[in-house]
Amino acid sequence: MRLTPTINLDALALLFANRIASAALLVRLGLPAAELLSRCERGGPWQRLLPGVLLLSPIPPTRTQWARAALCYAGADAQLTGIDALHLHGMRSLPPAGQILVLSRRGKPPTDRVRVMATRHPPPPLLMDGFPTAPLPRAATDAARVLDNPRALSAVFTEVVTRTGVSTADLRALLPKATAATRQALAVVERPPLAVKRAQELTTHLGLPEPRWGSTITTAEGDPLGVADAWWDAYGLAWQFRTPQPSSRALLAAGAVVVHTDPTTLKTGGPHLLTTLARATAQAQTRPRPPLTAKNGINPTPTQPPPPPPHPVPHSLHPSPRRPPHPHLNPHPHPALT
Image (cartoon, rainbow, N blue to C red; front, side):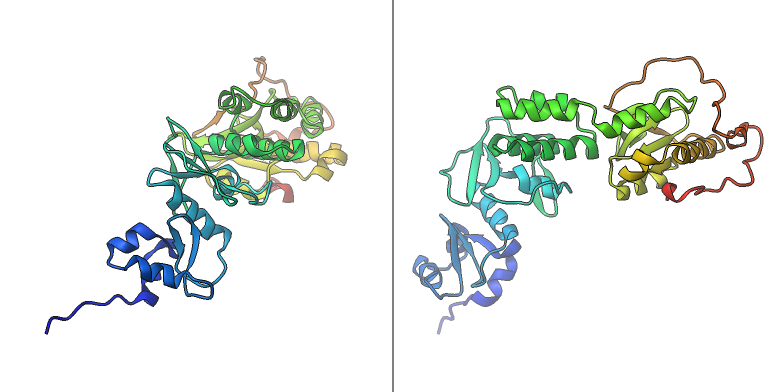
């Protein structure tokens, strides 16, 4: 007697990422089409999420499973873009909502959950948490194409520019036919916010060269480490007053001296903050400059080497590089540096 091999349908789901499978592939594996239809009936063990795309589970799908289903629906060359892609890149300005956006060379009819954006020249995707994902600038601009709320647009652009160093010029290049709301949101990001103006006022009292504003700091090989809201290249000194503090860890590990200031301290802590920055400068001068590079951002105006800092910054906070560090200077002279 000839034995017919059977498929354990309950275990089959474990073979597919997020339990998402195409009906065509299941048929090629030997499952009759009638069996698929039967298992996807109301109350059955599987669900039909999109045309030709099944969830091999009776539990309501998560946003992650919908994203996987959207990629399966769009085809082999598809990649996530928009807000879902921004979340994979670590952006959190807006929650994933609405249609899931997917880039593909081939168009597909839109559904309530998925919109496939056809493009002749898709960017090389990045693999983020197992999902082929559009690069950050493309994900942001594709999100902008479907957002009609000016605040949401500004939130996306502000987070992408201030946290990653993507320039507004990069975003504008991908939006040749930007709407009025999108152009306005980009203009808001380009306009120096009050925090930057306050920081610029404080740095004039330090007697230091003008820093580079809003730069992505990279290794010598070009790997990004974080964003410096102000960067003194000669000293390897970063000041962060708009960037979340966790982003300073990679910079510290690479040898940079980092001052992190919360908005309240930036607004009210004038003399105290000047002392903190002066101590950080002194600390940076006592160590070799790390091999780091600043990209994007606003270049400082060329100046002559800075004179000694004026009062009220104590002279003892600026030791000569030939002398040992001041006895009161330690790797973390102020809590803001940690």
